[in-house]
Length: 463
Image 1 (cartoon, one colour):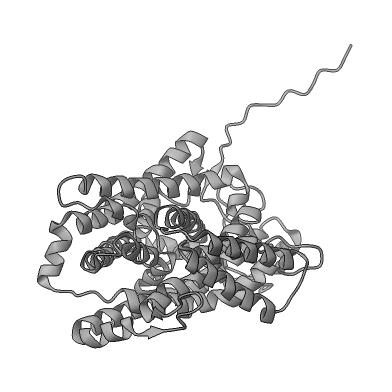
Image 2 (image 1 turned 90 degrees about the vertical axis):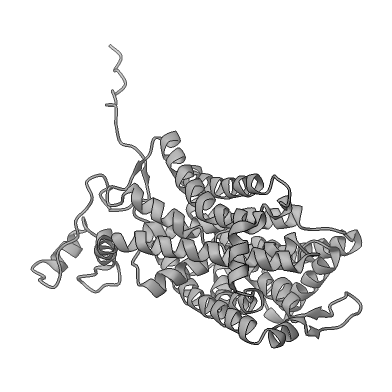
């Protein structure tokens, strides 16, 4: 008699949302967010300085902003300092964003379709709903629909800066979700800028920029090294992209995406990871704060604040950030969970996701950039839009602070559990619970309780 195939018992085990990260991913996220947190604090400080400068010494602020530097030939690089900050320094920011995107797709959370579905759906909903709310607010007379993209961006550095200032702990799973969400959000913002806010295309310059990108890719793939070769080439590509009429920051993203972010045999870091490690402090510590210094200086007065809540364009931005981002991200996450039949990490609650969704409504750097791109011929409207970005981001920051503080004690306990290392080997204990050697080393220790494994985690404590 032929043997029967084994009968598999049905399982009710469901995929978990916001489960514990793998150890390598947790290490990478921790290092990346440490730099972004410092950059976020500098960003907050730069924004405050810009507001004080623009309101106390407005003539001096405008004079510095409009001061022209650079050659007029052959590529019209005689630009104001404000434009250099917007088109030049932010290219460094988008270069790092490009590397982050590449890494997420080849080695991070986005490499698996099932894992990527949550942040992708959340990010798309968090972009679509603010745009829709802005469009509805500006549909009538006096509205300006061209600013629809302003409230769609999340600023991870500003959000982490808020967390650092208010002293709120946040488990690594929530921080990783916030970072991955921001990466997808950046990708959408890049596409929006390239498609909707580029005009007067000069195809000869665009073609040469593309040729430079091909050369950049070829040299990198051939294993050619040397900053003295790649930095001048990158500057030429940037200048040609700027001349072409496509926003110059697209050049930074394109070069970041071309770097190899997977490790080959014998490598401790891939070239992309190594370059990101070198450039991220420059982006977070200099490029973005200086851009904020030159972009966040708007007039704050009673009439100006009233206009934020009484005129269609700034009101649409505030509603988009505070309501659109929050409801879009939270609703998208719930939708993804229902669609994939996944369940939330039992150590967290949906209220935690709602608080993070509010925090993701902080849209600073890219929102300020799009404010200038959306209304190039109307500086007054651009300034009102920037004021609305500041007000909307501030409201999101305050609301998120209150919500996160309510759960901060629980977050602190989770963070302590994640970081506990009784045997001092540099590996958190939650990743060694079933290792006999670890059990022997920590037997009888009294300086901390043994971590507990959630009932539905795998035996190694990972997702």
